[in-house]
Length: 125
Image (cartoon, rainbow, N blue to C red; front, side, top):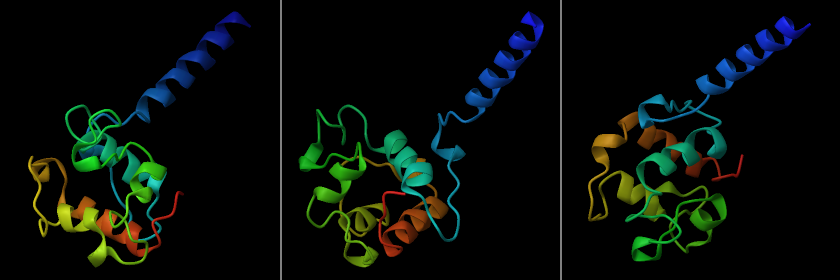
């Protein structure tokens, strides 16, 4: 019985380690039904929501992207259904200025994915 418990534990730990996202390259956006929890949040955490940028403590320009509420409560940052009017999309697509460059960490497919999420209503899904 003890050997069975150890085997189950090893498989459980291996399954968990495979799901940990450590690089933006690991985040793949679907063409539709984009998930905030599965794609948008991890992408923002790895590229924007860290010290000296847009985390809770620093919040450069008053923008905190550490969670759904913070992201959607800032007026104009996300306008559900209207990506062209959303400041986040304008910044991601290079239409609005940004002090630090993050473009080399976010792919065009990921930018399209965030745009699609906003177009689909920017839900906390």
